[in-house]
Amino acid sequence: MLKLLGNTTRLCDGIPRREVLRVGGMGAFGLSAAGISRLRAAQAAEAGSSQAVANAGLPGFGKAKSCILLFPYGSPPQHETFDPKPEAPVEIRGELGTISSVVPGLSICERLPEVAQVLDRCTVVRSVTHPYPLHCVAYSATGNPDYDVSLETRPRDLRHWPFLGSIVGCARERSGDLAAGMPGNIGLPWLLNSKSDIAPLAGPYAEFLGQRHDPFWPTFNGRGTRVGPHLSDAQTRDVVDPYAGCTPEGRFEISDSGQSGPELELSRLGRRRDLLRQFDTLNRRIDKVAREGQYDRHQQLAFSLLADPRLRKALDVTQEPLPVRERYGLTLFGQSCLAARRLVEAGCPFVTVFWDAYEIFAGCAWDTHANHFPRLKEYLLPGMDLAMSALIGDLTERGLLDETLVVWMSEHGRTPQIDSKPKGAGRHHWSRAYSVALAGGGVAAGRVVGSTDPTGGEVADTPVSPKDLLATTLHLLGIDPHWQVPSWDGRPLPVAGSGVVRPELIG
Image (cartoon, rainbow, N blue to C red):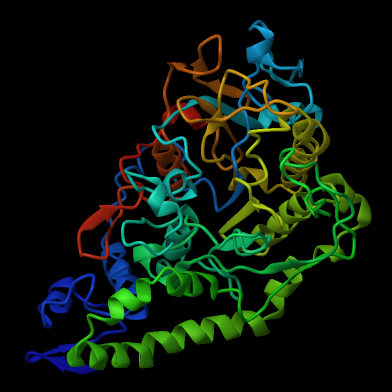
């Protein structure tokens, strides 16, 4: 306990904002990064304790117990996935054909034959749109209303908003709804971007909810078996890429560094240095008291997860029969999807599976500015087809799909006009119209929402924003998307930003 200005204030068990702001005029820059994180976590708990569930009367509220977010980083083309344009000129439709799915009238890319067989359990949204054609995990999967390139390389910039998985993990922890030994929010297969030649970029972090709600990051330890197709002619080095193929011996491991990435990123980017310059004696004393309480809780959580056999067991995909593993595909994305199924089965409420860069970033795996068609045919679409269809099928067979929401989405789409100049052709960034697919957890079955114009470049009807997808996901998970938590400067912000629940997506 610490007595401040005559009032007894418990720093680690819920801090009223007015008390924090009274102390020496403290605001966003008055505490260390760790101190701010702890204070925000406490404030979020306080704010959440009185949240009103405004959308509880809408259909589907709380239908899902857990969510698996499949995130193909770099952005798949809508034309070669869920919104083909077979009647368009070849420079629009490309060289891949279409096939019918089990849903009458719904055709998709011919290289997704297994996915075509599970779309009767899905809703395909062809009209997702937003104004930022950038690699913006930190926009597309958060409530942040604005974005620019500078934010991408600043994971702890104070303008960032909390990641979807962090919101879910925070809400589940606050409600006492976490399974013993399970984190509330796990990211696979490793800390995003950490196995490539760049520093980790922004996106999947808890930001003003507090770092305790960052994803828990296991790491994959296994060998690749195939050289991945080059990103462009400029790539001279062959990369044996586990996303192209991995050995059955590969496994996910827990390490005590699994939570350290964001703090290291903050140091790299100089944010800690900026905050430290503004310390004063009182702030140091307050941070010391906070650290003695809340930091111990952070450490205890990390060590308990390291020691608890339940998380290790759930991550151990080698316990699955080989035919099951092969059904998902012996690729890193396939095995990550299998691990995600095991994790939600064990009680984890939110798992993100990233299709990340490996060794060479160059915009990331699905960023097909060049070698577009070879990469899609030999590498990207086959891996997606096996893993996504197996996950939906496996959840169905185990009776878990009704309570597990599966979301396939990325940052944006790709240009309707094919660039024929690079070898293998290319499609570039495009956010004015693209596709997302959802399954289970209260989502409508066999439905198509929205449409695009004949080129697949503009929304023709029913525009859906990433914020709407965020709000609808939270709603299905029983979390009010209008729940307000205090930002770094104390402003109450709704976790889903401007997003609204979309009944068109709900069954």
